[in-house]
Length: 207
Image 1: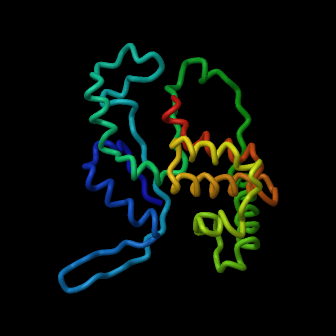
Image 2: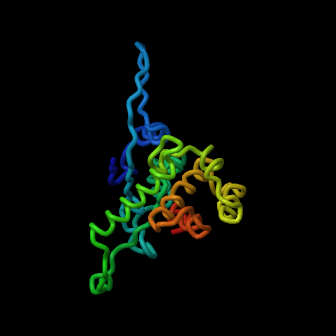
Image 3: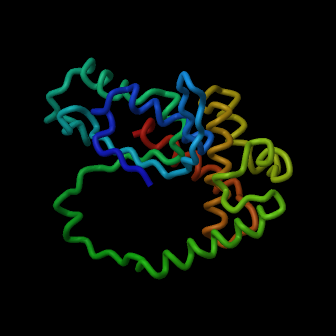
């Protein structure tokens, strides 16, 4: 796993260098003497403030940033890079009321058991393709041997037709939907899984 805190503070060329290994799972280095490829399959976590001053949450009344400053800040994370980020979440500031709420969270052992079971389902389903995880499945298989009914993918198909999603984004939503189904001990994604996966991908834009 690779984590980049305050991701927009990195130079754009540094962030864009992650695009190719995220897509192919390989880091390819070109030199005059030749080309070398190294395995580079990893999980990427990018964290960013809502703006340079970090106060553009809620109504953003305390924010001191201009619109130009905000665009420049997020402009360092290019569209092609974000297109390779499967889950994009907007996290609101913790309020005083949140501290007083009693919550019942799952313990680590319970979550680990569910994730382990999901991994087992993936290995069993994908063994005929020589793969182990949903992240490894190429689009030709997602839209081929593992193709879902049209009624299930209708919202996804509409998003692609309207230009809301790229072809790459379409496949990444499918992979996430398969994972949601695996975590819920089901054989294949439902329309709700597709909708949830699509919503997780667009949460920042909608916030």
